[in-house]
Length: 85
Image 1 (cartoon, helix red, strand yellow):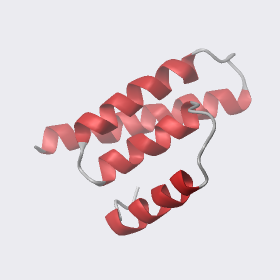
Image 2 (spheres, rainbow, N blue to C red):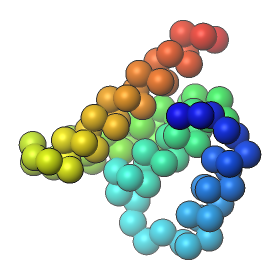
Image 3 (cartoon, rainbow, N blue to C red):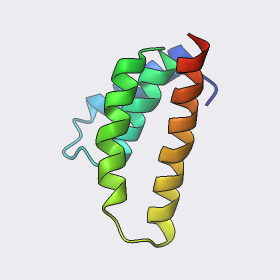
């Protein structure tokens, strides 16, 4: 949420270096966050859509609710960034 472009890019490159085997909702949320941080809102919105679809499929319980809440917060950030343009 700090929008530190350098740190976000470094973090993403470390994730990619591990060659992730699944693209679950956490992967897409991370890609969304990077796009938002780098002000690439098209990429961020595409990643948000993919991740949110996955997050909505889980049962309404504990950690799954937290994941959905994170997507809700990310959506607010994306909408705020779009309004700033």
